[in-house]
Image (cartoon, rainbow, N blue to C red; front, side, top):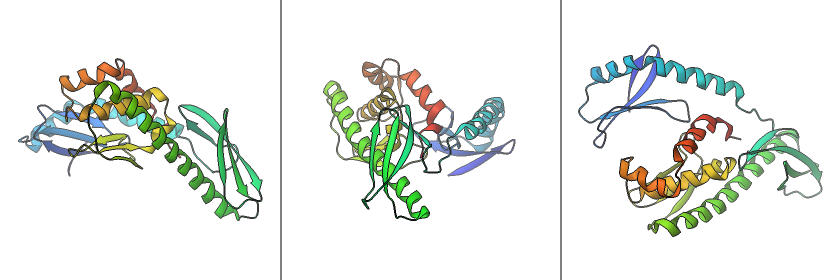
Length: 239
């Protein structure tokens, strides 16, 4: 993908046959992306960026603030993670069992860990245990919500895949395969529902036209507020 530079900021530049106007966005990985109509020359795109330098600077400051607020993890007792949008505090208890166990109990995430494991092995085991638990729970919840919303829409889809992605929460392919980021399990159920409905509606409309958003609105009337929450809080959904 080509890139442009404006005031020392790198902007990924892509052209699309479907684009009718410029679209400048900041993805959840902190990368600016400018999408333009197919025949747009670079100099026109650069003029567009110059008019939006103020917005770009505002987003950069917001990202810098999020980096400061982003949780840091040591995978030891006392760490705080998010589960369905609520903070849970990690407690690690020694055990004679070699296989770790994990459960959520109120606002506590309890992991039992083999008492004779080395520190380095223990930290790695805790991280793997949390990730496996989140991924399995996300798969369960997302399949359940897909079934729930598709009772309304009645769309046909094929494979459903859970992925570990940094900048996307979901996607829908032209083969009618749906992909979701397992980290969604850290978000409130309302946000999970929004992403599920968002991708379901792409089965009917592979775009973000007014027809597409009308479909989303049928199930998620306040989708704008939910999308805003995800833009502003995505940095919390990490381990």
